[in-house]
Length: 381
Image (cartoon, rainbow, N blue to C red; front, side, top):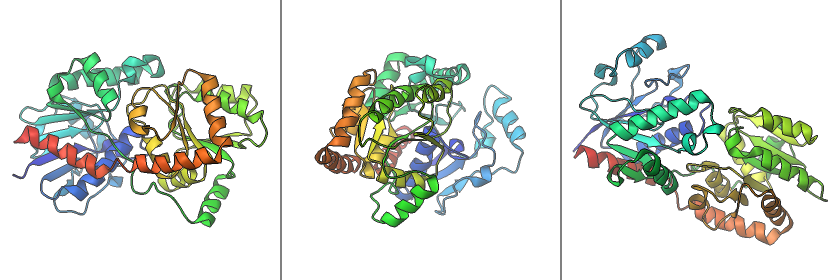
């Protein structure tokens, strides 16, 4: 039976963070795997209003359409939030609505599926702005009360959702993400060298990818890097690629205190093609995060053959398996020792590269899409 399904893609526009990247890659995989059901994609969605929805992904397959209303964003905002219930006519003829980014609008007669990516706003509230913490809290509580299904990227997140929101098991589904096919080993050394030249770095660098915010534990990484620099033949650069995030003043201040302004490079938000080059060229990818709902950069790095040092908390052991050196992110000595081990041992680097590519191959966005469609069907049949 053919069903009509609506999906929020508002977070995919502009410079998307983890939630937006997840939604973008999921929808693109869904286009490839489901040619039966009919989908409406919403580039504007309730409280999420990107600056220009004309940039939204427009699938060319006949069973997908972009919901493009010729109205100002202010008009759309009033229609979504001006009433207790969003107007059903704004959605169009859909039977199920999927929000892949916490928000949980309720529309009578329409099934609701919400993806909760992590519960850090409860487990580590001090890492969030008060505005963001309240938003995630309110929307997750709504999802726990209103959603027919709650999807989680990892078993770790599902356990947290059950613990904090008391969602029964029959409404919880664990569906991991993946690294996209663009994240792969590159053979063109000249193209790699040209990209590094444009970015102003050499091949002798360690890499971190993610938002510059406290949860990512960047102060500890910077301090560990400072200790590494005291040795001989150590990395010239610590490259940090990712959006600005929040509550990060202390991170930048630590760089200045350690006099590492010349060695720690904040490249900001980068296009995928640049990230792929960085993953391929780095001596090691280091991800000492204090909490992750999934930890997508770890899979991306592994897919590109980067040796990985990662914290071993929350969801990260599920993602990394035995293909990374896992450390306690609160143990600065352990972080330094793991980084030294990877840098000093060519055999270990080769082993981690091989294991990482194999581990990453166990995840695919097509599988994510198929499992999600199974959840849709379960609540529409």
